[in-house]
Length: 472
Image (cartoon, rainbow, N blue to C red; front, side, top):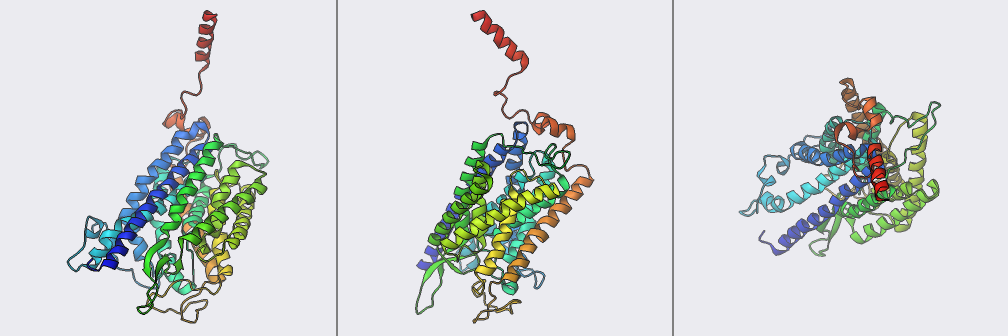
């Protein structure tokens, strides 16, 4: 990089994304606490193992397949696979490289490939963590790892290529817009979890003989609430990682530099931060009224509020976020309880609600609120948008495109692969733990008590009483 301004932009972007991935790591820390706190004591170790092992499994799947899929599938099936040499596992651009020698790919990707890669790895971990909580206390660890490696390491990235890049066909032809991934991370993960839950079935004792819903409370609510607060801290990094800083937005005569969304449209961290905190606060208020102050749901409203606004948060006013977050959480909460009662779906942590249903709401709401806005910045190719173009010829955000997009992510890339994958594993008898194991607790058969020093046996208690009697 011989040009000083270019070098500054590349090196600053490298540092920027490195900082975001450090913050995003907290998302996984928070999800682990959240799910372990929700599990009953007899399943703590198994729940912890699920969250720990998704890290290497998704990372390997992403390295060998997912990173290429995100770049290659943008125009499929309406165009060819894209050529992306920096995404191939054997590429020299995946290794140490300082560029130079007139190698444009080396100068750019040699600095940025690793941090871009890691940002998407953290997005992928998030898809796995969202699914994980819904399935606790009954799924086999091996079955879970198979499902999440395929989904988190590959499937959702095919959809992301089509709907989360300026040249994606969903963006160019449908006007799809999802700035902070409400559909292509949250709704798709909630949908995948729902597909697995349909096959997996509820926990033993969740529903009574007459279909009544029984509450299975978390074993540790403070751990649940603290975990969600840590998730929301990491979400700041997630949201910032959806920006690309230091991009030339002006002309040669009137130079101007700023940040853009993943679609290339202008955005600021300032607006994102304000919208984020207002949406989070409004979601908490909505869940406080719905649940009559239950801390579990109040804290879940943090996630639901942000997800309910995420698709269009790059262009919303904070007051719009307040209204949308409140409405989205109301919708998600009541959908959760309706589906739970009507279809006997046991979503242990409300993941399908706060990510899936809130994600659908977010995507569709953006189609109405941002109707007429350009879906993406110019990519060099002007395509005839199926549902309208703006004055410059580029596809516009519109309700129909967003509705179809929500269906594609929640159903096509979410429910269907989750259901099919679970059905295949069920046919081999390896999806769910045996009844006696579930009743006794997964830890008792696999990993041991998660809190071995917090309770004593009857014999130990009698021995303590005898020692106390001697002292007296």
